[in-house]
Image (cartoon, rainbow, N blue to C red; front, side):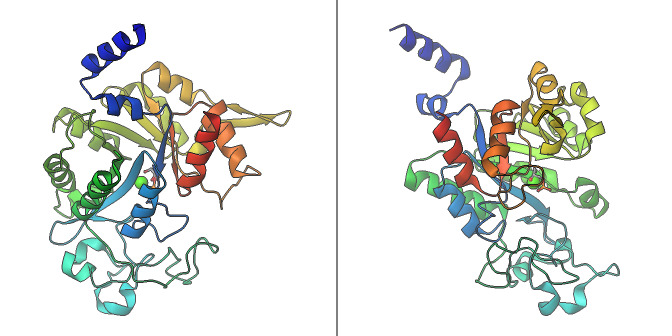
Length: 325
Ligand code: G3P
Ligand code: CA
């Protein structure tokens, strides 16, 4: 009875349904560019696979097309994940790169998406992943991905969230593009406006994330991405507009003492300010300082006590957390 009353109080305070509260896990699994360890990143196929793996959130990196459609792609460039250099050889800029922003959505749809490769050498970045150049993958818009995830949520009775990132806001501004406003409008059209909705909005550019909160008055859950260790000194400033931080995982590790990892104060400092911590990127085929993926998860997810992880191998993290329950 006591638990029932407590639950009803929580429901009233948080203003969300029973299923939303019960399904919110202590630590979240974010499918980084989809299940990108198994299928080419940011394809609808990789997103469907991640959905089937029961992740909590699926990530979308966003860049605008020439005709203002937010495209789900990691970079402002096309030449490291598509065959653009074969299809539109004349559309490269003076720096030798092909830019998403120079192509209409219709043109982008004609490109074949591939497993990531080095555009200079043509060599696949992660050699044991899906073979480069195989398959019939295509680029897609934010709207198309949201409709896929919301559709799968309905047909599988799940409530998996989205985790969009505003990419390169300064570049878009310089090109006269309003990426952020366009994205916020689409999110709102699809029902993502508050922290209760299953949407976390992220950005590396602190000024832009601050603008999203303070000028554009977004009430979404906001995560400030951190690229360089020295940015960690700005935590108090980030806490004035963000709900969480997304650091490179290495910024959490300090050094090994007697074969045991010690940690920086980043996670505890963030937690003191009420900020969640979602480090990137956990890759089972790029272990660096760890001897196994399990070890990486044990040290960072459990010992360092982060609140969630961006991973290319979401099934392995879901399995790890289920085993811990
Ligand atoms: O956005 C967090 C995570 O995705 C790491 O950044 O460079 O892969 O977009 P990036
Ligand atoms: Ca990202």
